[in-house]
Amino acid sequence: MPVSWPLVRIELDHVTRRFGGDRAAIDDLSLEIQDGRLCVLLGPSGCGKSTTLRCIAGLEAIDAGTIRFAGRVMNDVDPRARDVAFVFQNYALYPHMTVEENIAFPLRMRGLRRGARQQRVREVAAELGLGDLLGRRPRHLSGGQQQRVALARALVREPKAFLFDEPLSNLDARLRVELRGTIQALHRRLGTTMLYVTHDQAEAMVLGERIAVLDRGRLQQYGTPAEIYARPANLFVAGFLGSPPMNLLRVVARGGRARCLGIEVAVPRREGELVLGLRPQDLVLGGEGLRVRAAVLAVEALGHETLARVQCGSETVVAWARGHAPGLAGHEAGFAFAAESLHAFDPVTGLRLDGDRV
Image (cartoon, rainbow, N blue to C red; front, side):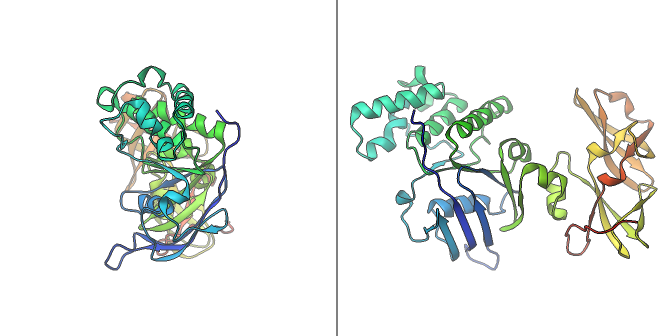
């Protein structure tokens, strides 16, 4: 395998794409993916993430804005000339071709001589564990094996960038974990630019060096997984990223104080309604900090942890306990959270509030 790899910085500058009607599939999207970065486009179905990927690949025309590769405007460049590899959700293998022929197809289209094609295919197949499957046709492969063939067909081209459109969504949980590891290992070795689309936040947190969170065609937040998890920019990101989602509680602030789960806490200096967010993992059974008593309504005992749906006064929230604790249901228990784990948001704009606390 070659030790060098082409790199490209991908820039989207106020890109808009409409399919008819008033709402844009991509709405004034500006985003920069540095060369060699693995960036995840994350959001719910219909948020525009796959459309964004198709516009970058040239499979969709944009209605406004500019797409650049390494500073070069790509708006009118033919998809074949953009030199990106697209890995689809449905594998898109040729059923009448063998694994070897499927992998070699891009090289054959380039006119590479047969001997060089075969050598390159064997190298890539060995790296992805497909060496013993080269003579088979797609119908004789498992879903995981078919997706490896699709990865190999992309890898063999040595493209400037890889575009992955929910490539693991058709696989079972074990295979998803396995192929996530394969993609991570490829990125570490190649160091090339990769864009990965998913609605699975766990997948995004594991794979992404950067995450772009989209909703209704608009960018909500862009940063590292740790940054977005620790400081969600708005209520959408706070409620979408995290499993289970963040507890969001409406409170009334007076003089920089408010009551949260029956406890008075410091909040940004403002008067009136605001929304406080508290992650379930920060509301801990028997933990340290501000202590509350709550009735445990139901539990999900997951072995290494237990998620408890609890009622504290008029509020129902999700809390966390270490280990396997199915016996909590139907009892009252003590939970605690640290004041600094609270997130504050404007209930009208949805934006994060950062300000002095009393």
